[in-house]
Image: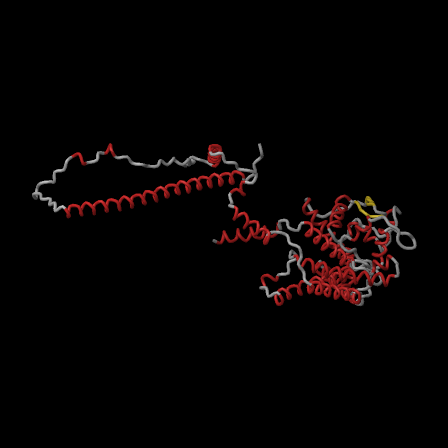
Length: 496
């Protein structure tokens, strides 16, 4: 016995109701047909009677027969000319009574479904594997399949040559901005811009937390950093290898990337909360996590929730104290890593450069040379420009070249053509970026990564996965389109 899902009972009830409706229509059809035959026979009989009366009248007139009766006397006619009721034979058709399901005020849904199953048994109704399919006619099924294919199926991109040209040009513009305005950490114009933006953000955050400003003759950013360092202390802020008893090599230039609590992402938040609650510190070295016990660290708060909030506040405030370097640093100082960049230390294999270093060590050295969150903000600008420019040009082309309405020109990434154009655009950006990094690095892996835009490659990678998924699922059901249609239909029903 197959297991029913929650819609089977409803489908079975609809099939039985359809069977009852079809039976009723068939019965009405037979009745109408019989009535039509009776009407035809009645007209024929009427015409025959009229003919006989006409003939009888003609015979009477020809024989000059006169019927005379007194006023109060009736015409005497022999009873033998009457037809008795026993001699009348009426041909009639007997219609069978239609089967039905009795429903009363006491009938609940379970009783009704039991009656539905009994009705189906009496009439040999097979519900089949897909009962809803049996509710539709052949023409309805064909129309439904056509609509699903046109409106709710995943389609491949149908880009023309102009789409590829536009996307490639947008990516080229983003690549040139990356090459000429980003460059090496701390040297490009956009990196200087994001450095200044970060310094301003640190000062504003410090003022929000009570900083009154720098003393006369002192650097404002360094003063704000010092204030935050004093007010948002954490137990995992080890600066060099001596602070961890020489268990592994660490310096002031790389302790922010080696300490997982300094990562400005969910990984960093998790390890920061764990370290603050357990008085531990987690570091990454040689592709493995190292846990160190620290001095007892007391979080503020009377209960667990308030302690969690205090831990989150400490984590966020300490990140602001480190994002622009330390208060005593010279130059840019060592910031915090780009989100999830710390995880590159787990790729502890490969042999790169003269000293045959693993990729994890190369990633740490790249961070030491300024590849931090501030530089990551600069790297994001060419990526953002490529993204927005591609979407804008797609919208313009749809509106003015294809003459579509503005409602149809919303640059949603679910559109196959726009998705393909974004892939081409960011691919072009990565091609320009990689070519420039390869030519200027001279084969040095550290220099190559310093000049590479990892954010551009991350965006290109996500778009590639989406395109591969769309290619694999081409022709399948688009769940998002179905959900959008159902939501719109539900809203329409509520409004009506």
